[in-house]
Amino acid sequence: MQEQAYLIEKKRLFPWLEELQKEFQLIGPVERDGGSAFAKIQSVKDLNLNYGLTMLGPQVYLYHPEERICTIQEKGGKFDVQTLDTVPRQILFGVHSCDLHAITILDRVFLKKGMEDRNYRLWRENTLVIGFHCSHIYPQCFCASMGTGPFFEPKEGYDFLLTDLGDNYLIETLIDHPQPASPSRGREEMPPHSREAGRDRALKLLSSLNPAQATQEHFDKKSQISRELESQFQKEIDTSHLVEIILRNQYHPIWSRTADSRCLGCTNCIQVCPTCFCYNVKDRISFDLTTCERTRYKNGCLDLHFAEVHEANFRFTRMARLRQFVTHKLATWVEQFGCFGCVGCGRCMTWCPTDIDLTHIAKEIMATEKFYAARGDKKRTE
Ligand code: SF4
Ligand code: SF4
Image 1: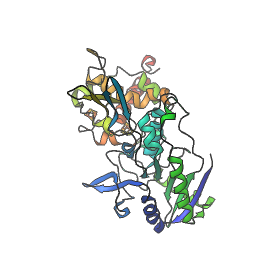
Image 2: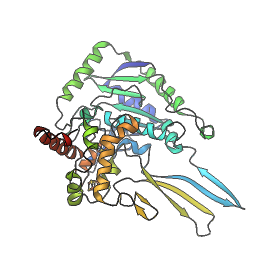
Image 3: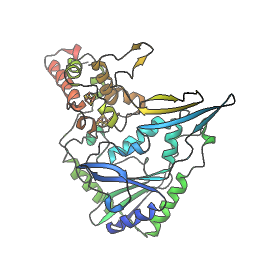
């Protein structure tokens, strides 16, 4: 894959986006109800480039909180299955590093070879992702601890990546995008890919801006900004032995103490988490039994009913559900996907009505281990 980097004057960004709006639905950060949110943009003037934490990440325009999977219709004894075949082309603009990482995680889940999710693939192929590096660190951010920010390092997942250098924007592009997954069952039934065409169009529009080539000096400035941001984090967590520590403390009292006294089981945490990918399915069947609409909706481990299998529930207690959430994010995800399931965005603790914070849980477990280590109690720390 080849990477190219350009420089454009700041005042040229919005006209560029307006050009792109002729072909794409623009989605980006706006101010809403006293906070920030990703929304469909009518006028680029509504964009807020210095936005703070949004309750829902931009991923909800790729993996929707509720979406129809298919409609099955019975006609003369035969069944006709209609799936989602076309979606509008869209741009996710202004995606911060933590959310870019979350998109790469969703790609790994939903575009896994042989197990591709049809709807996700369709949305992903019709979406241009324009990343935008943060210029502020907010109190709830801990992406630096999780290795996901403040600047985005991987060469995947985005189409353009912007950094504010003061008078100009540095624009990095990935010219040869990797296909997220190899051909798999059902792919030949998909409509022609339009992502390539959309990207070519965007590159053409970029070249019509006649941008200057970026030089090492601009990358040095980018590194300097990143270093300055790194020194501003208020929240952090030591991840060096996190996986082992979480796994060997599955019976630590913090789990039941936190869950029994504070967890409401409201599922806010999983709903706002940009990497949570679990869902449930419901069927709506017509009275005459000829039509069934199958819909999926985002759901997950904190929901009492999510682990129900026939008449049993293998995570019946709130303790088991909270432990599953934190253990998956900070430990077992690593074995499953090769990275943490937490990108350090701070959403789950921000929208938890009782301020449950997975970093506090992990830190209390670490403090207990340190206490026993100081006493020389090896059984509890190895
Ligand atoms: S948001 Fe907080 S209270 Fe609600 S389920 Fe999650 S941890 Fe429990
Ligand atoms: S677990 Fe919490 S902090 Fe981590 S990615 Fe999910 S919402 Fe963000």
